[in-house]
Image (tube, rainbow, N blue to C red; front, side, top):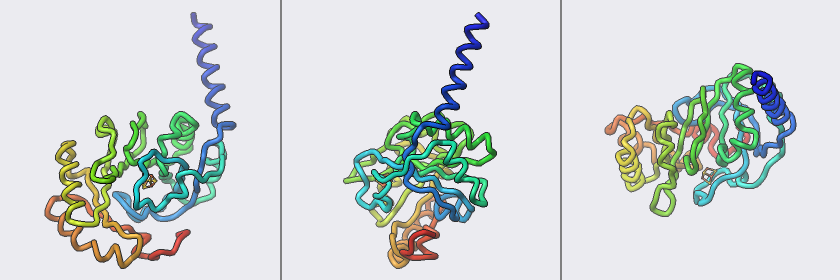
Length: 233
Ligand code: SF4
């Protein structure tokens, strides 16, 4: 009996090691910057953007290249690349990162934690969030063509809900989502939409006032305010 258990464990270990070295994950980009939005605004972070997203795509998507453009990298190579940057936080985003949970992301998650990184995930919540232990999960539910694309069983696994607002109507839709899912206001963060500095500034007063009145956290999009439309920052 003990022999059987031993064989099973070592087979699993071999499989995990093989995955870390050989599994090709689809990586859209890896870069270092300051976190530009949400509850950890301004913190230095390594961003791992995984390729692939779940339809329906958002009409305002600012990273359409992440839908289908990628370089293949094994988890061990992603860890090695992360070591090039002066940050202890890895933000895993997309696209929709959890599409690759069973395709190397689960092993990468364990490797990064073992190396001492703090891990944050940014997900749309369009598909079920796996059991990500020891990581902070930010979910940005998407309001597309009048309805929320959101897997409701995700709610207990989300640490922060981050919404984008652009009008009074969009704030009403956010409020109704929050009340339908009985979300605690401490978990809410609202950002003004705006792909340019001017666009963002024009929405900030509306979002600020609403967040103040409702007791939500507000986040600007720091990289847009700082650099406007300049990329690679
Ligand atoms: S979920 Fe994110 S990556 Fe996917 S279409 Fe929407 S904004 Fe773009």
